[in-house]
Image (cartoon, rainbow, N blue to C red):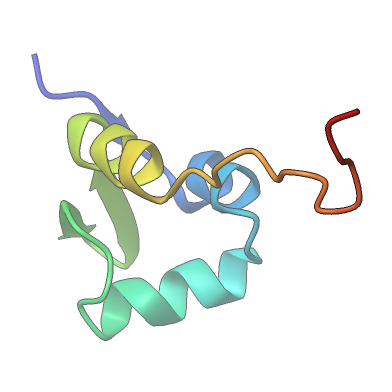
Amino acid sequence: MNVLLTVEDIAPVLRITERTANDLARRGELPGTIKVGKVWRFKREEMESLIGQSWPEPQTDNNVHDA
């Protein structure tokens, strides 16, 4: 089953505003974007793939030295 997410669902996860999510969808810069009437929907599988690829790597502390 193809689960569709709303702008309200994806914006906080992507750490962007709803307006930015709408703008990115309009420009075709988000994967799995579908326009339903006047609103954007996003394929859950595509969003999960995007999040997995862009999830930040853990930061290392460059000030820690081995003894």
